[in-house]
Image 1 (cartoon, helix red, strand yellow):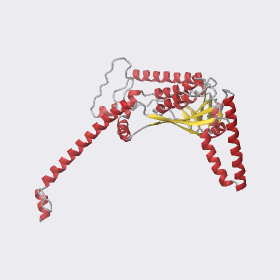
Image 2: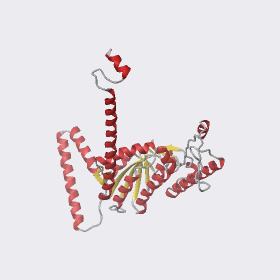
Image 3: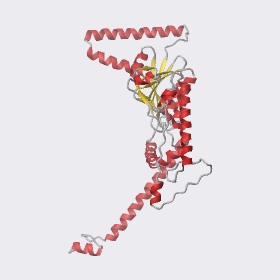
Image 4: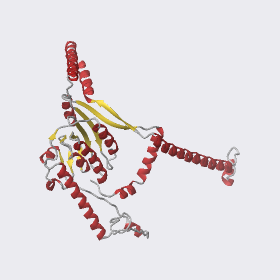
Length: 367
């Protein structure tokens, strides 16, 4: 049988093509594809490195008026729900209002008065474990401080469950730049500002939170798995060599000692002390002896512990501010071409692959 010949000898297919040729061609094709992909990757990396030298600025600031957004929404709704006569009267009154505002502005310019309507700059911070949004935050704060004056205000809509100590320390330092310039800093928490998130929030000159927002968690946590017993069971030895008595206190693979464990806890307590001192200095009305237990409280309970100044959502606060100030949303957007996006995806895969090693290198402590 023809099929039997193919199975027995492995030399030909049903139509008589030699199997060895097909296999060799397949291997050649695979090698060619691999080589082409490798060349393209090298070219992409070289292009990206070259682009960095030619393009120092890799992002831009976007500014949008919340006053205009609110007016547009209100105008659209009124146009639908009001009668034709009422809508005409409303439109006429709105037109007169804008005309009067222009006249007042011109008078102020002629009189050379320095008084002006205050401006509110709104910044959003959505924090993850590494506080990666700090790269955007530092650009946004720098842009705002280049134009803001003491009569103005910065509102940060903050959401974060906390994360790495050094990362949130840097994020908090960005907000302290606003306060050091004598500009009012309002932090609004709609969902959560815990641990490192609260470390940032407590810097506010005015701190508000939604009634069921979660705040607090003034504590430090460290969690390190240890596989030493498992490796010993497989007869695998792991040697951890250090120069310096406490260069490595606890390890993931080596055998941990009681002395190393005690030193690790000592460092953990020291970070907690620094955290408590920071909160006490930034928000003196908080009794850190009571709240620095690692617990978190919802809105009303947080207010009772002086963790916040008022219960109010960010939407409610900003709508109210639109009546007396010009409110602008500030956002830093990184410019990315197609090659940047490809490289970002490639680097994200590597970051996921080596995430545990990276965390251990950066330090085990988390807020």
